Image 1 (spheres, helix red, strand yellow):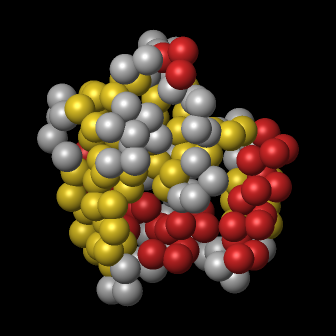
Image 2 (cartoon, helix red, strand yellow):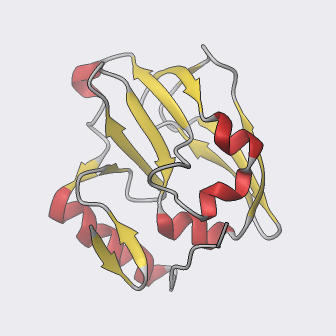
Length: 148
């Protein structure tokens, strides 16, 4: 796990280089969430609204909407695909996104329409971490996670 300006940046995830991460799962689906830097910028998440299970989302279209005291916005799908699961823990406790954005607070699990191209717009490894450092610098983010 890399860390920069207090932001945790797992090297094994894939990133849209904005605020979404994706983790490939053994069954061909992907677990999707938001980065530590994104949860910090959003502030304490108070509400989260998900698209329905089974909904098809085009890449870039929201799978969920987060709302905090200072921000409201959609969380885009990183690729075209279907929502298979919604994290019920986050439905019950939206603030969990501010506590553990890479583990307990994943948002959805999606099945890509085209598994061979699902990662085309995502980056991983050293190149992704370097790009995320630039993103963090551009927005002058100093990460912090809320306590449960």
